[in-house]
Length: 592
Image (cartoon, rainbow, N blue to C red):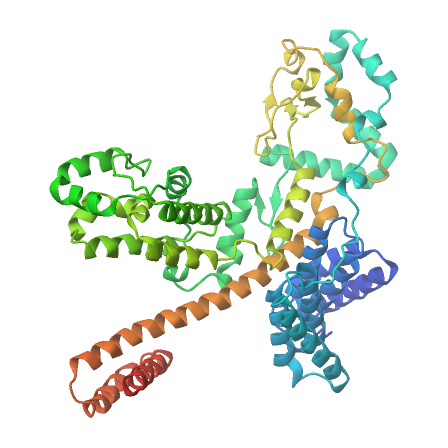
Protein backbone atom coordinates (compact mmCIF):
# COMPACT_ATOMS: atom_id res chain seq x y z
CA UNK A 1 0.00 0.00 0.00
CA UNK A 2 1.05 3.62 -0.63
CA UNK A 3 1.03 6.38 2.00
CA UNK A 4 2.13 9.95 1.39
CA UNK A 5 0.66 12.01 4.25
CA UNK A 6 0.45 12.00 8.01
CA UNK A 7 -3.10 10.76 7.71
CA UNK A 8 -1.85 8.05 5.38
CA UNK A 9 0.83 6.97 7.87
CA UNK A 10 -1.81 6.69 10.55
CA UNK A 11 -3.93 4.62 8.19
CA UNK A 12 -0.91 2.38 7.50
CA UNK A 13 -0.49 1.60 11.19
CA UNK A 14 -4.16 0.75 11.49
CA UNK A 15 -3.98 -1.36 8.32
CA UNK A 16 -1.00 -3.33 9.67
CA UNK A 17 -2.84 -3.77 12.96
CA UNK A 18 -5.85 -5.16 11.10
CA UNK A 19 -3.64 -7.62 9.19
CA UNK A 20 -2.28 -8.85 12.53
CA UNK A 21 -5.82 -9.23 13.88
CA UNK A 22 -6.77 -11.34 10.86
CA UNK A 23 -3.77 -13.57 11.50
CA UNK A 24 -4.85 -14.02 15.12
CA UNK A 25 -8.43 -14.85 14.13
CA UNK A 26 -10.10 -11.63 15.32
CA UNK A 27 -11.91 -11.08 12.02
CA UNK A 28 -14.65 -8.78 13.28
CA UNK A 29 -12.29 -6.23 14.82
CA UNK A 30 -10.02 -6.40 11.77
CA UNK A 31 -12.96 -5.79 9.46
CA UNK A 32 -14.06 -2.80 11.53
CA UNK A 33 -10.59 -1.25 11.11
CA UNK A 34 -10.57 -1.94 7.36
CA UNK A 35 -14.03 -0.38 7.09
CA UNK A 36 -12.78 2.80 8.78
CA UNK A 37 -9.45 2.98 6.92
CA UNK A 38 -10.98 2.59 3.46
CA UNK A 39 -12.91 5.84 3.95
CA UNK A 40 -9.56 7.72 3.95
CA UNK A 41 -8.92 6.94 0.28
CA UNK A 42 -10.89 7.63 -2.91
CA UNK A 43 -12.74 4.69 -4.45
CA UNK A 44 -10.29 4.39 -7.35
CA UNK A 45 -7.14 4.62 -5.18
CA UNK A 46 -4.96 1.50 -5.24
CA UNK A 47 -5.04 1.37 -1.44
CA UNK A 48 -8.82 1.03 -1.60
CA UNK A 49 -8.28 -1.97 -3.87
CA UNK A 50 -5.92 -3.62 -1.36
CA UNK A 51 -8.39 -3.06 1.47
CA UNK A 52 -11.30 -4.48 -0.55
CA UNK A 53 -9.23 -7.60 -1.24
CA UNK A 54 -8.60 -7.95 2.50
CA UNK A 55 -12.32 -7.53 3.18
CA UNK A 56 -13.08 -10.21 0.59
CA UNK A 57 -10.58 -12.47 2.33
CA UNK A 58 -12.36 -11.97 5.67
CA UNK A 59 -15.71 -12.79 4.09
CA UNK A 60 -14.26 -16.07 2.84
CA UNK A 61 -12.77 -16.87 6.24
CA UNK A 62 -16.18 -16.26 7.83
CA UNK A 63 -17.95 -18.62 5.43
CA UNK A 64 -16.89 -21.57 7.59
CA UNK A 65 -18.33 -19.84 10.66
CA UNK A 66 -21.69 -19.02 9.03
CA UNK A 67 -24.71 -20.29 10.95
CA UNK A 68 -26.88 -20.82 7.87
CA UNK A 69 -26.57 -21.30 4.14
CA UNK A 70 -28.24 -17.92 3.63
CA UNK A 71 -25.48 -16.16 5.55
CA UNK A 72 -22.84 -18.23 3.78
CA UNK A 73 -24.15 -17.21 0.34
CA UNK A 74 -24.28 -13.59 1.51
CA UNK A 75 -20.60 -13.75 2.49
CA UNK A 76 -19.71 -15.20 -0.93
CA UNK A 77 -21.65 -12.43 -2.69
CA UNK A 78 -20.02 -9.86 -0.42
CA UNK A 79 -16.59 -11.16 -1.39
CA UNK A 80 -17.44 -10.97 -5.09
CA UNK A 81 -18.80 -7.47 -4.58
CA UNK A 82 -15.41 -6.41 -3.23
CA UNK A 83 -13.50 -7.61 -6.32
CA UNK A 84 -16.13 -7.61 -9.05
CA UNK A 85 -14.52 -5.13 -11.44
CA UNK A 86 -10.75 -5.52 -11.14
CA UNK A 87 -8.63 -7.58 -13.55
CA UNK A 88 -5.90 -7.92 -10.92
CA UNK A 89 -7.97 -10.52 -9.08
CA UNK A 90 -9.39 -12.43 -12.04
CA UNK A 91 -8.55 -15.82 -10.56
CA UNK A 92 -10.18 -15.06 -7.21
CA UNK A 93 -13.32 -13.62 -8.81
CA UNK A 94 -13.64 -16.46 -11.33
CA UNK A 95 -13.22 -19.04 -8.59
CA UNK A 96 -15.87 -17.33 -6.44
CA UNK A 97 -18.34 -17.18 -9.32
CA UNK A 98 -17.81 -20.87 -10.01
CA UNK A 99 -18.38 -21.65 -6.30
CA UNK A 100 -21.62 -19.66 -6.31
CA UNK A 101 -22.75 -21.45 -9.44
CA UNK A 102 -22.23 -24.77 -7.68
CA UNK A 103 -23.90 -23.61 -4.46
CA UNK A 104 -26.99 -22.17 -6.14
CA UNK A 105 -27.43 -24.57 -9.09
CA UNK A 106 -27.07 -21.37 -11.10
CA UNK A 107 -26.28 -21.21 -14.80
CA UNK A 108 -26.32 -17.44 -14.28
CA UNK A 109 -23.11 -17.58 -12.22
CA UNK A 110 -21.47 -20.20 -14.43
CA UNK A 111 -21.90 -17.78 -17.34
CA UNK A 112 -20.44 -14.98 -15.24
CA UNK A 113 -17.55 -17.29 -14.32
CA UNK A 114 -16.80 -17.90 -18.01
CA UNK A 115 -17.08 -14.21 -18.85
CA UNK A 116 -14.84 -13.21 -15.94
CA UNK A 117 -12.20 -15.77 -16.85
CA UNK A 118 -12.08 -14.90 -20.55
CA UNK A 119 -11.98 -11.15 -19.93
CA UNK A 120 -9.05 -11.39 -17.53
CA UNK A 121 -7.16 -14.27 -19.11
CA UNK A 122 -4.89 -12.13 -21.27
CA UNK A 123 -3.76 -9.95 -18.35
CA UNK A 124 -3.43 -12.83 -15.88
CA UNK A 125 -0.07 -14.05 -14.64
CA UNK A 126 1.24 -17.18 -16.32
CA UNK A 127 0.91 -19.24 -13.13
CA UNK A 128 -2.80 -18.37 -12.91
CA UNK A 129 -3.79 -18.91 -16.54
CA UNK A 130 -3.97 -22.70 -16.29
CA UNK A 131 -6.28 -22.51 -13.27
CA UNK A 132 -8.50 -19.88 -14.94
CA UNK A 133 -8.77 -22.02 -18.09
CA UNK A 134 -9.72 -25.02 -15.94
CA UNK A 135 -12.46 -23.01 -14.21
CA UNK A 136 -13.81 -21.84 -17.57
CA UNK A 137 -13.97 -25.41 -18.92
CA UNK A 138 -15.62 -26.64 -15.73
CA UNK A 139 -18.26 -23.89 -15.92
CA UNK A 140 -18.93 -24.71 -19.59
CA UNK A 141 -19.35 -28.37 -18.64
CA UNK A 142 -21.83 -27.44 -15.91
CA UNK A 143 -23.87 -25.36 -18.35
CA UNK A 144 -23.98 -28.27 -20.81
CA UNK A 145 -24.99 -30.61 -17.99
CA UNK A 146 -27.80 -28.26 -16.93
CA UNK A 147 -29.48 -28.77 -20.31
CA UNK A 148 -29.99 -32.48 -19.62
CA UNK A 149 -30.09 -32.65 -15.82
CA UNK A 150 -32.51 -30.82 -13.49
CA UNK A 151 -29.78 -30.45 -10.87
CA UNK A 152 -26.35 -29.22 -11.88
CA UNK A 153 -24.71 -28.57 -8.53
CA UNK A 154 -22.72 -30.85 -6.33
CA UNK A 155 -22.85 -28.64 -3.26
CA UNK A 156 -23.90 -30.05 0.07
CA UNK A 157 -24.65 -27.53 2.84
CA UNK A 158 -22.85 -28.14 6.08
CA UNK A 159 -25.76 -26.96 8.16
CA UNK A 160 -27.90 -29.15 10.34
CA UNK A 161 -31.65 -28.87 10.76
CA UNK A 162 -32.60 -25.51 12.22
CA UNK A 163 -34.52 -27.25 14.98
CA UNK A 164 -31.31 -28.81 16.23
CA UNK A 165 -29.50 -25.47 16.34
CA UNK A 166 -32.11 -23.40 18.15
CA UNK A 167 -31.12 -21.84 21.45
CA UNK A 168 -32.54 -23.44 24.57
CA UNK A 169 -35.98 -22.11 25.40
CA UNK A 170 -36.32 -19.65 28.24
CA UNK A 171 -38.11 -22.28 30.34
CA UNK A 172 -34.95 -24.40 30.16
CA UNK A 173 -32.82 -21.56 31.51
CA UNK A 174 -35.02 -20.09 34.19
CA UNK A 175 -35.91 -22.37 37.06
CA UNK A 176 -39.41 -22.98 38.32
CA UNK A 177 -38.29 -21.62 41.68
CA UNK A 178 -37.78 -18.10 40.30
CA UNK A 179 -41.12 -18.18 38.55
CA UNK A 180 -42.89 -19.34 41.69
CA UNK A 181 -41.08 -16.68 43.72
CA UNK A 182 -42.30 -13.93 41.38
CA UNK A 183 -45.90 -15.14 41.50
CA UNK A 184 -45.80 -14.97 45.31
CA UNK A 185 -44.65 -11.36 45.50
CA UNK A 186 -46.90 -8.49 46.56
CA UNK A 187 -48.44 -6.37 43.77
CA UNK A 188 -46.68 -3.20 44.99
CA UNK A 189 -43.31 -4.96 45.00
CA UNK A 190 -43.88 -6.14 41.44
CA UNK A 191 -44.77 -2.62 40.29
CA UNK A 192 -41.75 -1.11 42.02
CA UNK A 193 -39.54 -3.77 40.43
CA UNK A 194 -40.41 -2.29 37.01
CA UNK A 195 -38.64 0.97 37.92
CA UNK A 196 -34.92 0.61 37.24
CA UNK A 197 -32.54 3.11 38.79
CA UNK A 198 -30.09 4.36 36.17
CA UNK A 199 -27.47 4.98 38.85
CA UNK A 200 -27.77 1.43 40.21
CA UNK A 201 -27.65 0.06 36.67
CA UNK A 202 -24.52 2.13 35.96
CA UNK A 203 -22.89 0.86 39.17
CA UNK A 204 -23.71 -2.74 38.28
CA UNK A 205 -22.34 -2.34 34.75
CA UNK A 206 -19.15 -0.78 36.08
CA UNK A 207 -18.61 -3.64 38.51
CA UNK A 208 -19.13 -6.36 35.93
CA UNK A 209 -18.00 -4.77 32.65
CA UNK A 210 -15.63 -2.00 33.85
CA UNK A 211 -15.36 1.41 32.20
CA UNK A 212 -15.98 0.05 28.70
CA UNK A 213 -19.47 -1.04 29.68
CA UNK A 214 -20.17 2.29 31.39
CA UNK A 215 -19.19 4.18 28.23
CA UNK A 216 -21.49 2.01 26.13
CA UNK A 217 -24.37 2.54 28.56
CA UNK A 218 -23.80 6.30 28.51
CA UNK A 219 -23.86 6.30 24.71
CA UNK A 220 -27.09 4.30 24.67
CA UNK A 221 -28.80 6.72 27.06
CA UNK A 222 -27.54 9.75 25.12
CA UNK A 223 -28.93 8.35 21.86
CA UNK A 224 -32.25 7.59 23.56
CA UNK A 225 -32.59 11.13 24.88
CA UNK A 226 -31.65 12.75 21.57
CA UNK A 227 -33.60 10.56 19.14
CA UNK A 228 -36.33 9.19 21.44
CA UNK A 229 -35.42 5.73 20.17
CA UNK A 230 -33.52 2.83 21.68
CA UNK A 231 -32.37 1.85 18.22
CA UNK A 232 -31.22 4.09 15.39
CA UNK A 233 -29.79 3.31 11.96
CA UNK A 234 -26.37 4.71 11.08
CA UNK A 235 -25.15 4.90 7.49
CA UNK A 236 -21.63 3.47 7.24
CA UNK A 237 -21.22 3.80 3.48
CA UNK A 238 -19.25 7.03 3.26
CA UNK A 239 -20.88 9.05 6.04
CA UNK A 240 -22.29 8.72 9.56
CA UNK A 241 -25.84 9.89 8.94
CA UNK A 242 -28.12 8.85 11.82
CA UNK A 243 -31.62 7.75 10.78
CA UNK A 244 -34.52 7.05 13.09
CA UNK A 245 -36.00 4.20 11.04
CA UNK A 246 -35.08 1.58 8.48
CA UNK A 247 -37.23 3.37 5.90
CA UNK A 248 -35.40 6.66 6.46
CA UNK A 249 -32.05 4.87 6.17
CA UNK A 250 -33.13 3.15 2.95
CA UNK A 251 -34.21 6.48 1.46
CA UNK A 252 -30.88 8.03 2.47
CA UNK A 253 -28.93 5.20 0.83
CA UNK A 254 -30.95 5.48 -2.38
CA UNK A 255 -30.67 9.26 -2.63
CA UNK A 256 -27.09 9.80 -1.46
CA UNK A 257 -25.17 6.64 -2.26
CA UNK A 258 -27.00 4.72 -5.01
CA UNK A 259 -27.00 7.35 -7.77
CA UNK A 260 -24.27 5.52 -9.69
CA UNK A 261 -26.47 2.43 -9.91
CA UNK A 262 -29.62 4.21 -11.12
CA UNK A 263 -30.66 4.14 -14.80
CA UNK A 264 -30.07 7.42 -16.60
CA UNK A 265 -33.73 7.75 -17.50
CA UNK A 266 -36.96 6.86 -15.74
CA UNK A 267 -38.08 5.28 -19.01
CA UNK A 268 -35.39 2.62 -18.55
CA UNK A 269 -36.73 1.54 -15.16
CA UNK A 270 -38.92 -1.55 -15.04
CA UNK A 271 -42.19 -0.61 -13.34
CA UNK A 272 -44.20 -3.22 -11.45
CA UNK A 273 -47.98 -3.26 -11.70
CA UNK A 274 -49.91 -1.62 -8.88
CA UNK A 275 -51.86 -3.25 -6.06
CA UNK A 276 -55.21 -2.70 -7.81
CA UNK A 277 -54.16 -4.63 -10.90
CA UNK A 278 -52.78 -7.45 -8.76
CA UNK A 279 -56.14 -7.73 -6.95
CA UNK A 280 -58.01 -7.82 -10.26
CA UNK A 281 -55.82 -10.66 -11.52
CA UNK A 282 -56.17 -12.71 -8.34
CA UNK A 283 -59.89 -12.13 -7.79
CA UNK A 284 -61.40 -12.86 -11.19
CA UNK A 285 -63.36 -15.94 -12.30
CA UNK A 286 -61.46 -16.20 -15.61
CA UNK A 287 -64.27 -17.84 -17.57
CA UNK A 288 -64.24 -17.60 -21.39
CA UNK A 289 -66.56 -14.99 -22.91
CA UNK A 290 -68.78 -15.61 -25.98
CA UNK A 291 -66.87 -13.04 -27.96
CA UNK A 292 -69.22 -12.59 -30.91
CA UNK A 293 -72.20 -12.07 -28.60
CA UNK A 294 -70.17 -9.69 -26.41
CA UNK A 295 -69.15 -7.64 -29.45
CA UNK A 296 -72.80 -7.38 -30.52
CA UNK A 297 -73.62 -6.12 -27.01
CA UNK A 298 -70.95 -3.42 -27.31
CA UNK A 299 -72.22 -2.31 -30.72
CA UNK A 300 -75.96 -2.49 -30.00
CA UNK A 301 -76.13 -1.68 -26.28
CA UNK A 302 -73.09 0.52 -25.70
CA UNK A 303 -74.64 2.62 -22.92
CA UNK A 304 -75.72 -0.50 -21.02
CA UNK A 305 -72.23 -2.02 -21.39
CA UNK A 306 -70.61 1.24 -20.28
CA UNK A 307 -72.88 1.26 -17.24
CA UNK A 308 -72.10 -2.24 -15.93
CA UNK A 309 -68.38 -2.04 -16.73
CA UNK A 310 -68.22 1.29 -14.90
CA UNK A 311 -69.95 -0.27 -11.88
CA UNK A 312 -67.51 -3.19 -11.83
CA UNK A 313 -64.48 -0.99 -12.58
CA UNK A 314 -62.89 -1.32 -9.13
CA UNK A 315 -63.24 -5.10 -8.98
CA UNK A 316 -62.37 -5.42 -12.66
CA UNK A 317 -64.82 -8.24 -13.39
CA UNK A 318 -68.46 -8.29 -14.45
CA UNK A 319 -71.01 -11.12 -14.54
CA UNK A 320 -72.92 -9.42 -17.38
CA UNK A 321 -70.70 -10.72 -20.16
CA UNK A 322 -72.04 -13.90 -21.84
CA UNK A 323 -70.01 -16.97 -20.81
CA UNK A 324 -68.92 -19.60 -23.34
CA UNK A 325 -69.00 -23.34 -22.66
CA UNK A 326 -65.49 -23.97 -23.97
CA UNK A 327 -63.40 -26.32 -21.84
CA UNK A 328 -60.17 -25.76 -23.77
CA UNK A 329 -60.33 -21.96 -23.49
CA UNK A 330 -61.40 -22.28 -19.85
CA UNK A 331 -58.37 -24.44 -19.10
CA UNK A 332 -56.02 -22.04 -20.90
CA UNK A 333 -57.43 -19.07 -18.98
CA UNK A 334 -56.97 -20.85 -15.65
CA UNK A 335 -53.33 -21.56 -16.56
CA UNK A 336 -52.78 -17.92 -17.54
CA UNK A 337 -54.31 -16.78 -14.26
CA UNK A 338 -52.01 -19.05 -12.24
CA UNK A 339 -48.97 -17.78 -14.15
CA UNK A 340 -49.94 -14.13 -13.64
CA UNK A 341 -50.70 -14.70 -9.94
CA UNK A 342 -47.30 -16.34 -9.52
CA UNK A 343 -45.60 -13.34 -11.16
CA UNK A 344 -47.56 -11.02 -8.85
CA UNK A 345 -46.58 -13.00 -5.76
CA UNK A 346 -42.92 -12.87 -6.76
CA UNK A 347 -43.31 -9.13 -7.49
CA UNK A 348 -41.96 -9.44 -11.03
CA UNK A 349 -45.08 -8.72 -13.08
CA UNK A 350 -44.09 -5.52 -14.85
CA UNK A 351 -46.30 -2.97 -16.56
CA UNK A 352 -44.64 -3.80 -19.89
CA UNK A 353 -45.61 -7.49 -19.60
CA UNK A 354 -49.16 -6.54 -18.64
CA UNK A 355 -49.39 -4.10 -21.56
CA UNK A 356 -48.09 -6.76 -23.96
CA UNK A 357 -50.72 -9.25 -22.77
CA UNK A 358 -53.48 -6.62 -22.91
CA UNK A 359 -52.55 -5.69 -26.48
CA UNK A 360 -54.00 -9.04 -27.65
CA UNK A 361 -57.64 -8.38 -26.71
CA UNK A 362 -57.40 -4.82 -28.07
CA UNK A 363 -56.20 -6.08 -31.48
CA UNK A 364 -58.75 -8.91 -31.40
CA UNK A 365 -61.67 -6.56 -30.74
CA UNK A 366 -60.51 -4.15 -33.44
CA UNK A 367 -60.58 -6.98 -35.97
CA UNK A 368 -64.18 -7.66 -34.94
CA UNK A 369 -65.13 -4.06 -35.65
CA UNK A 370 -65.05 -2.55 -32.16
CA UNK A 371 -63.80 1.02 -32.29
CA UNK A 372 -60.92 2.36 -30.20
CA UNK A 373 -63.33 4.75 -28.49
CA UNK A 374 -65.71 1.94 -27.50
CA UNK A 375 -62.85 -0.17 -26.13
CA UNK A 376 -61.85 2.74 -23.88
CA UNK A 377 -65.44 3.63 -22.90
CA UNK A 378 -66.14 0.03 -21.88
CA UNK A 379 -62.95 0.00 -19.78
CA UNK A 380 -61.75 -3.17 -21.47
CA UNK A 381 -58.11 -2.06 -21.25
CA UNK A 382 -58.48 -1.65 -17.48
CA UNK A 383 -59.48 -5.23 -16.71
CA UNK A 384 -57.84 -8.64 -17.22
CA UNK A 385 -61.33 -9.93 -18.06
CA UNK A 386 -60.76 -8.71 -21.63
CA UNK A 387 -58.25 -11.60 -21.98
CA UNK A 388 -61.28 -13.89 -21.70
CA UNK A 389 -62.47 -12.54 -25.08
CA UNK A 390 -59.54 -14.21 -26.86
CA UNK A 391 -59.54 -17.41 -28.87
CA UNK A 392 -57.44 -20.52 -28.36
CA UNK A 393 -54.48 -19.46 -30.52
CA UNK A 394 -54.01 -16.10 -28.78
CA UNK A 395 -54.38 -17.69 -25.34
CA UNK A 396 -51.77 -20.33 -26.19
CA UNK A 397 -49.40 -17.60 -27.34
CA UNK A 398 -49.85 -15.67 -24.07
CA UNK A 399 -49.44 -18.85 -22.01
CA UNK A 400 -46.26 -19.78 -23.85
CA UNK A 401 -44.77 -16.35 -23.26
CA UNK A 402 -45.63 -16.29 -19.54
CA UNK A 403 -44.22 -19.80 -19.04
CA UNK A 404 -40.82 -18.55 -20.20
CA UNK A 405 -40.62 -15.98 -17.39
CA UNK A 406 -38.66 -17.40 -14.48
CA UNK A 407 -40.11 -16.73 -11.04
CA UNK A 408 -37.37 -18.38 -9.02
CA UNK A 409 -34.16 -16.40 -8.82
CA UNK A 410 -30.79 -18.09 -9.06
CA UNK A 411 -28.56 -15.11 -8.29
CA UNK A 412 -28.57 -15.50 -4.49
CA UNK A 413 -30.82 -12.49 -3.86
CA UNK A 414 -33.36 -14.63 -2.02
CA UNK A 415 -30.61 -15.92 0.28
CA UNK A 416 -29.48 -12.37 1.06
CA UNK A 417 -33.07 -11.39 1.87
CA UNK A 418 -33.46 -14.31 4.27
CA UNK A 419 -30.11 -13.55 5.90
CA UNK A 420 -31.23 -9.95 6.51
CA UNK A 421 -34.57 -11.13 7.89
CA UNK A 422 -32.82 -13.47 10.32
CA UNK A 423 -30.67 -10.60 11.58
CA UNK A 424 -33.59 -8.22 11.94
CA UNK A 425 -35.61 -10.82 13.83
CA UNK A 426 -32.98 -10.76 16.58
CA UNK A 427 -33.39 -7.04 17.14
CA UNK A 428 -37.15 -6.65 16.74
CA UNK A 429 -38.79 -4.58 19.46
CA UNK A 430 -41.96 -5.64 21.25
CA UNK A 431 -41.55 -4.44 24.82
CA UNK A 432 -40.91 -0.76 25.57
CA UNK A 433 -38.60 0.95 28.02
CA UNK A 434 -39.58 4.52 28.83
CA UNK A 435 -37.71 7.21 30.77
CA UNK A 436 -38.74 9.64 33.49
CA UNK A 437 -38.32 13.32 32.68
CA UNK A 438 -36.65 14.68 35.77
CA UNK A 439 -33.37 16.55 35.34
CA UNK A 440 -31.18 13.50 35.82
CA UNK A 441 -33.22 10.95 33.82
CA UNK A 442 -32.82 8.78 36.88
CA UNK A 443 -35.31 5.98 36.14
CA UNK A 444 -35.91 3.53 33.32
CA UNK A 445 -39.52 2.34 33.29
CA UNK A 446 -40.05 -1.18 31.95
CA UNK A 447 -43.07 -1.94 29.79
CA UNK A 448 -46.12 -2.27 32.04
CA UNK A 449 -47.41 -5.03 29.76
CA UNK A 450 -44.70 -7.29 31.20
CA UNK A 451 -46.80 -7.45 34.36
CA UNK A 452 -49.36 -9.44 32.40
CA UNK A 453 -49.17 -11.82 29.45
CA UNK A 454 -47.88 -9.91 26.41
CA UNK A 455 -48.85 -11.16 22.96
CA UNK A 456 -48.64 -7.80 21.21
CA UNK A 457 -46.94 -7.58 17.79
CA UNK A 458 -43.53 -6.01 17.26
CA UNK A 459 -43.35 -2.21 17.20
CA UNK A 460 -39.94 -1.25 15.83
CA UNK A 461 -40.75 2.41 15.21
CA UNK A 462 -42.25 3.34 18.58
CA UNK A 463 -40.74 6.40 20.19
CA UNK A 464 -39.66 6.46 23.83
CA UNK A 465 -42.18 8.08 26.15
CA UNK A 466 -40.87 10.51 28.73
CA UNK A 467 -42.96 10.04 31.86
CA UNK A 468 -43.41 13.01 34.20
CA UNK A 469 -44.99 10.99 37.06
CA UNK A 470 -43.06 7.72 37.33
CA UNK A 471 -44.44 6.93 40.80
CA UNK A 472 -47.98 6.61 39.47
CA UNK A 473 -47.03 5.13 36.09
CA UNK A 474 -47.90 1.56 37.10
CA UNK A 475 -50.87 2.30 39.37
CA UNK A 476 -53.46 1.04 36.89
CA UNK A 477 -51.34 -1.72 35.35
CA UNK A 478 -52.82 -5.20 35.65
CA UNK A 479 -50.52 -7.54 37.55
CA UNK A 480 -51.01 -11.13 36.47
CA UNK A 481 -48.77 -13.60 34.71
CA UNK A 482 -45.00 -14.08 34.68
CA UNK A 483 -43.88 -12.69 31.31
CA UNK A 484 -41.33 -10.52 33.11
CA UNK A 485 -39.39 -13.70 34.01
CA UNK A 486 -39.37 -14.87 30.38
CA UNK A 487 -38.27 -11.40 29.28
CA UNK A 488 -35.37 -11.39 31.73
CA UNK A 489 -34.37 -14.88 30.70
CA UNK A 490 -34.13 -13.97 27.02
CA UNK A 491 -31.24 -11.57 27.71
CA UNK A 492 -29.23 -13.04 30.55
CA UNK A 493 -27.34 -10.48 32.60
CA UNK A 494 -24.44 -12.87 33.08
CA UNK A 495 -23.18 -12.60 29.49
CA UNK A 496 -19.42 -12.38 29.30
CA UNK A 497 -19.48 -9.28 27.11
CA UNK A 498 -21.61 -6.18 27.60
CA UNK A 499 -24.02 -5.59 24.70
CA UNK A 500 -22.60 -2.83 22.52
CA UNK A 501 -23.81 -1.21 19.32
CA UNK A 502 -25.29 -3.63 16.81
CA UNK A 503 -22.56 -2.51 14.40
CA UNK A 504 -19.96 -4.14 16.63
CA UNK A 505 -21.65 -7.53 16.29
CA UNK A 506 -23.17 -7.37 12.81
CA UNK A 507 -20.85 -5.03 10.90
CA UNK A 508 -19.40 -7.76 8.68
CA UNK A 509 -22.71 -9.25 7.61
CA UNK A 510 -24.20 -5.81 6.91
CA UNK A 511 -21.21 -4.83 4.76
CA UNK A 512 -21.52 -8.20 3.01
CA UNK A 513 -25.16 -7.38 2.30
CA UNK A 514 -24.17 -3.94 0.98
CA UNK A 515 -21.47 -5.40 -1.28
CA UNK A 516 -23.91 -8.07 -2.51
CA UNK A 517 -26.47 -5.37 -3.34
CA UNK A 518 -23.85 -3.31 -5.15
CA UNK A 519 -22.83 -6.36 -7.16
CA UNK A 520 -26.48 -7.04 -8.05
CA UNK A 521 -26.99 -3.38 -8.99
CA UNK A 522 -24.00 -3.49 -11.33
CA UNK A 523 -25.47 -6.55 -13.03
CA UNK A 524 -28.83 -4.81 -13.26
CA UNK A 525 -27.14 -1.71 -14.66
CA UNK A 526 -25.60 -3.81 -17.45
CA UNK A 527 -29.02 -5.19 -18.32
CA UNK A 528 -30.53 -1.71 -18.37
CA UNK A 529 -27.75 -0.59 -20.74
CA UNK A 530 -28.55 -3.49 -23.08
CA UNK A 531 -32.25 -2.66 -22.88
CA UNK A 532 -31.56 0.96 -23.80
CA UNK A 533 -29.48 -0.16 -26.77
CA UNK A 534 -32.32 -2.37 -28.00
CA UNK A 535 -34.81 0.48 -27.61
CA UNK A 536 -32.50 2.84 -29.52
CA UNK A 537 -32.12 0.25 -32.27
CA UNK A 538 -35.89 -0.25 -32.41
CA UNK A 539 -36.38 3.49 -32.80
CA UNK A 540 -33.76 3.66 -35.57
CA UNK A 541 -35.31 0.64 -37.29
CA UNK A 542 -38.69 2.37 -37.38
CA UNK A 543 -37.15 5.45 -39.00
CA UNK A 544 -35.36 3.37 -41.64
CA UNK A 545 -38.45 1.31 -42.43
CA UNK A 546 -40.43 4.50 -42.95
CA UNK A 547 -37.73 5.78 -45.31
CA UNK A 548 -37.79 2.58 -47.33
CA UNK A 549 -41.58 2.65 -47.60
CA UNK A 550 -41.52 6.25 -48.83
CA UNK A 551 -38.98 5.65 -51.62
CA UNK A 552 -39.51 3.71 -54.85
CA UNK A 553 -35.96 3.51 -56.11
CA UNK A 554 -33.14 1.74 -54.27
CA UNK A 555 -30.58 4.22 -55.67
CA UNK A 556 -32.00 7.05 -53.58
CA UNK A 557 -31.27 5.16 -50.33
CA UNK A 558 -27.58 6.02 -50.48
CA UNK A 559 -28.14 9.77 -50.53
CA UNK A 560 -30.81 9.55 -47.81
CA UNK A 561 -28.49 7.46 -45.66
CA UNK A 562 -25.65 9.97 -46.02
CA UNK A 563 -27.93 12.87 -45.13
CA UNK A 564 -29.31 11.17 -42.03
CA UNK A 565 -25.88 9.93 -40.96
CA UNK A 566 -24.45 13.46 -41.12
CA UNK A 567 -27.36 14.67 -38.99
CA UNK A 568 -26.63 12.15 -36.25
CA UNK A 569 -22.82 12.00 -36.06
CA UNK A 570 -22.27 15.42 -34.41
CA UNK A 571 -24.96 14.69 -31.82
CA UNK A 572 -24.50 11.08 -30.89
CA UNK A 573 -22.12 8.68 -32.61
CA UNK A 574 -23.73 5.75 -30.77
CA UNK A 575 -27.12 6.65 -32.25
CA UNK A 576 -25.52 6.99 -35.68
CA UNK A 577 -24.05 3.51 -35.45
CA UNK A 578 -27.40 2.06 -34.46
CA UNK A 579 -29.02 3.88 -37.37
CA UNK A 580 -26.49 2.35 -39.77
CA UNK A 581 -27.08 -1.11 -38.29
CA UNK A 582 -30.81 -0.69 -38.79
CA UNK A 583 -30.31 0.41 -42.41
CA UNK A 584 -28.10 -2.59 -43.07
CA UNK A 585 -30.61 -5.01 -41.55
CA UNK A 586 -33.54 -3.57 -43.48
CA UNK A 587 -31.67 -3.57 -46.79
CA UNK A 588 -30.39 -7.11 -46.27
CA UNK A 589 -33.93 -8.28 -45.53
CA UNK A 590 -35.23 -6.57 -48.67
CA UNK A 591 -32.52 -8.19 -50.77
CA UNK A 592 -33.32 -11.73 -49.61
